[in-house]
Image (cartoon, rainbow, N blue to C red):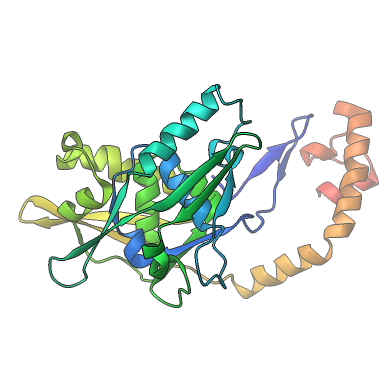
Length: 302
């Protein structure tokens, strides 16, 4: 889980790790696209779309041919053209080039269907994918001023299942609200493309809703709860409720500012204390925040 990290040095001393702003690019797309239906079969397909979307710049007026290193997609070193990585990439591309995204009209029963990419080229000599979004998707990625969702690419890449990916996108299109309206189960099944084997509510709740909730709240900074909406005794919809974003108390802000100002001094003290601890080993009790052996340890660990 990203918040509240700790680490342990070689001597087993636990030390808090300050949470920094997440690095990485930002993915932006229209709310309609974030809520759309498409039948991805593996986590690699949404990851590839997110990687490409993160390369769209705010001042782009048209789609370009964007480059995605295979290592960014697969998270491992690319092999030669006959290797396993090439086969995996080719399989992902073959599938995603045939995918259809369906966006339903806000009013009525109409819909619009889109292809994801208009072209893809693989360069095995340097392990690069060249891709271009289908031009009909321009209103959903370019010059977005309102009614759009955005999130950190790194968070999205950490999600381990298609359902957690799709529910994360969907919730990001609503997270400026305190909660979503009740989402009918039929609409969720359509958006997530859930198979018949998971459409019984107990199975859908356990293997889709609850599993995605665990993945998202543990691996990203999005915090939410959910509740079933009943009609009589039957569950007919699900409502998602977002945790309130509370501002830091004034005293906490002052304390954080003080820590920032003294960070350089603390780094110097820490280096001295760590050197002392390594030299004296178990004899130095400062690392355990007990009675300090030396003044440096006392200053740092107290």
